[in-house]
Length: 379
View 1 (cartoon, rainbow, N blue to C red):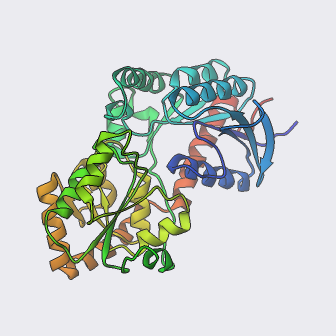
View 2: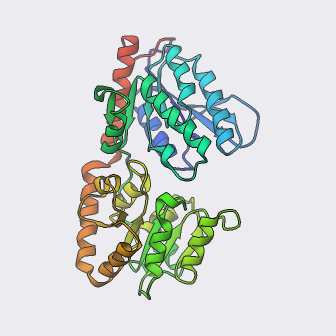
View 3: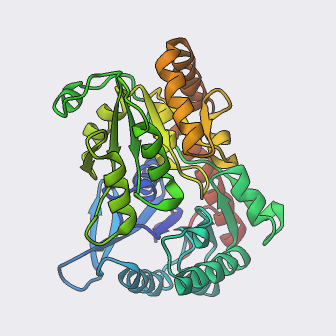
């Protein structure tokens, strides 16, 4: 009988990370917990292969892999398969995201503590159809009411959840990132850009991320500055994508989505500023990574971005204000230098991985003791 405490991570495409912020966190936290003596299981999704579950070990982490198609339906099938498997296990269940919180209630009924990271306010995102928003809204309520503990990655998310659950059941732990202090210039010059003489945006090309207003603002007048916009574009399928490309034609570089983390780090590190138009959600991973790279921030003006970036950055409410910010950073290099310095200070204050992972571990350990009388799992 293995007396080590057990942790199960659900809700991501798995490890090693290759898709986004939750996957990066799952990888970092899983490896951290293995080092701390926990038995860690991560549920993983692949697009093809044996139907599963396939069990293997990666860097000390037990992986349970299922095959599921991409898209919302495939994700729901994957989450259901993971839940059915995890119901037979015993330990702390860490669920990243509430999109299928209705399934996670079964983990509680099976006698396991469920810690749920409630992510952003997903049902407000314009990309979802009406029935998708209803599903997400209902699952936010289900997750908030049935999970053992709610984890918010931003004070505003914690306040939002407090409308659903008492504050004592909510813990605020932000997302983390690595500090970047040096990076190759080759990915920059290979795209005919000059280090320090371009701005960059990184993220999904969606209306609530305000990509179009930022590009319209940039392209409104000639500028001795480049604009690099990273993100998947499908102009033949998506009218918003077409509008973005048309607005930036000849002025903005659109290389698409880049998944090589070293390339993305280099492009971010050598930018004059990072443009962050996200308006829905909590602590956005890309914004935290920009702070870790010492980027000045040009951010959409909302409580989420102001808390993460700090007050010493540049904020805009619309395309006109964004254009004024571009004018300001071109005319005032001292303000840009100050913003970079403040970005690094804000990162070191709040978003280093080590204390964040320790906070998550403490929450998991407390949940295990409360549920089982010991930090060890019961089999």
